[in-house]
Image 1 (cartoon, helix red, strand yellow):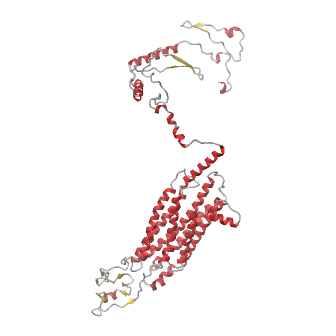
Image 2 (cartoon, helix red, strand yellow):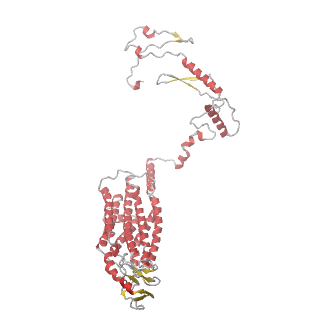
Length: 561
């Protein structure tokens, strides 16, 4: 509350050079020498320093150099809180509760459940919640500083801080409304192009408008910022008495820059409305006729925007209103409280509440897109007559259940092949093991392969009832034979190697003649050329007849080999 202030003479003291202020005597000559003046609002000031004189803040002594002992400055919060501060604390608590819901929704809607796309970046869906946090932070500072607006006996810095952060909060509220509408249009586009990414062209008028529209909005928002904040805020705090407020503070609070800044916010609001109309036109069904178009426009507009856009218009209208009316302005330390809180803080708080309720009721966009894709897939399956197995079928028929090594008591040994339980530790193999010859068709060579010979001595079979222990015994026996072969097993392996070497050294059929041994394109002239081969006898008394001479094969391509 502003106290009337006027000059009053110093009270009489004991003599002409003495004065008594609330029963405390001061040297009147020193007061006049330092140009101190007593005002009716209970302050003592010389233009540079200001002190409170009512008890219990009355100074106890004045020194000859003009210094007061035990004095209290006029710019100290000494008064109790008033109605403005109490309402500010209540609104601050409400904004604090909104902050919890904002963080919950940011975590819910900002989380990714699908790979990020270049066309739809995840930060785009988070901007509306970032601006909501900005609004809450600036509202905190603006509302809590109203406490000192009431507690200061003389209007000072708190009224500047309150007004400064209130204007920042107003800008954040308009940016919140813009980002909500813009992202809703982006979400509609994402659902529209998800079935067919090429249904919309990339360089048409629609895409150009969506590119330039954010730049246009933030251009006017920045114009509002530069018209409001870079100024001499010291004029706003000159409200120490009604005459000073009317002569100094009111003209500064209603100057042309504040008026122009409020109309910049009006352009921002119109841009938000145009963005909503643009999204409805391109991503929602169109109607014919003016009546049907108006009805379809109302029905297609989400309920959230039917509430947010009028509230945002109230914010703009209130800023225009206070730029012409100082008694109802937030810049006025003794302004109308109903106007300040109902028009200055109420609409912004309602916008936050609407956003929070919408965020809690709607699912994450990625999850919603997955649900839509699943629904489209089911519809296509029904059209084509495809019957998909239920989800539990994949879990029951998993691939790991077909691995025999994971089945207790099975025949798998964990290495990807089957082995009989009776072959390890019970089979006896020596040098007489059968040798199987395998003809390699690629190189024309003879490769020898032999059955595996156990290198361990026969171990006693497990006679217990535990199937797990029996399999473990068999595996341990096989591993011990590989890592620590016994002498008997080593001898058997050497004998098998000697047998394979002897078999390989045996003289078999003669290899076919090299192609260069035959004359090119020569036909056999006599029977001797064809069948004149000489038989020879091997050391094993076996008669071997060389193959008949044939013409070499002429290779024309790799397919002939």
